[in-house]
Length: 438
Length: 114
Image (tube, rainbow over all chains, first blue to last red):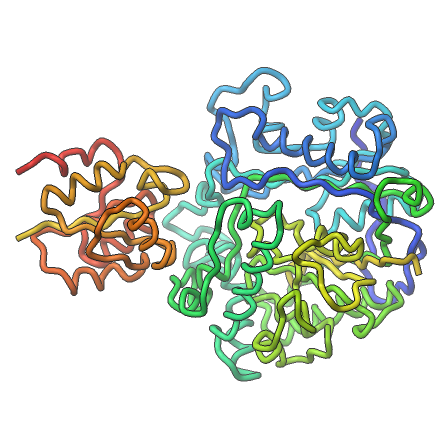
């Protein structure tokens, strides 16, 4: 069953106060598929659909929940490869396979309807369509459980990647920047980096001092944390550590953005199981409570957000999150902001003032001890840079840190609250987790 | 004067991710035919050097992809070829004065003794 998305679940305004369901919703399970670079077009146990089912099953098994108990399925049904993915994002015109792989669903896309049918989830009563990306869908799940729309909800984030590279087809392959693209991608497609990240990042360096390559300690640490993450791409594919020299000599993707500043597109799926705090107490895992969720879709004042705008946006996002959680910067133990491009992460770090980092302090903070063993275990997940573009490492690590099951990544500082996100400065969402409900 | 072949790794060599058309046997054969050979990849230089060492192949150069022009300045050759599977390979090859070649059977002629 699919449900129209007219449910008002977002917390995307300033001044909403403490979240009404604070501590009453919990994450009780998580599951990751293997993280591959691409699908080989042959192995039906490695399709995006098979990987999504596997991730769901792992999340359910971890929580000790049966298929019959699932009454909510929130699955991101858009394509990470985007409409300009070309043959990397669409299987057709290649022939489809036997059901359930007789359409794009299960191969390049996964949605709730396909999962419910394929997994035999017969008791689902909430399965919205047009679900946003993981940065917001975790908030949607938290709100739905808190509101009683469903009680035991799978949240699935499929990241399909047929060929290892994507977004290189369609209009992105055009030699011309036609129509509105003359204003947004005049020099070709750079994943939005020129207008979202690179210009404000250059402004940042000018305003506060420092240079781009001051990001090296952060990027290298992300790679290291990724190697400490057993399910991630780095750890499962023998990716080697990089040095400062490797970083600083790597190719510019979009000057000054270097190769190692960019995450690696992968073929993988992640699932989480959200339920009420009361139900979670009787499940297999130690509950990790949701203390708040918030979203933001800030209006662009022009085609180009400058540093002032980015700082204003991220300040507002931080204020919303802290207000809803009833917490402040000093209360956050684990901080896993988004790092899909390394140049954006400093904006979040400084907005949320984690470990006292203020505007302009990020490069000096990166140069300090940010290892998981140290006093400032920043982005202990390794993020996308360390694990591949699953966009879920930030959530998984936060949950595992609070459970005390992060293994070699387990921090040595207090781990009772965790903040995680998949977001760009203008769009996305944050979620605050707690080891305790209050 | 010798000819020079620069090999991309991922999508080009059999050891790449994804594996490419060029086997290590073909690389050895190129060396035996007298080509100056080496790699030019976004893989770190240390990775490239380790890869060649593991396959017991001695190469003349290991450079990052955007440093291909260094190879041209360091080696005198009759012809310069870069074999790679992406538009980025083509871009840097052409910018550096190399003939760009895609790794498929269309380049088998390189291995025919002249």
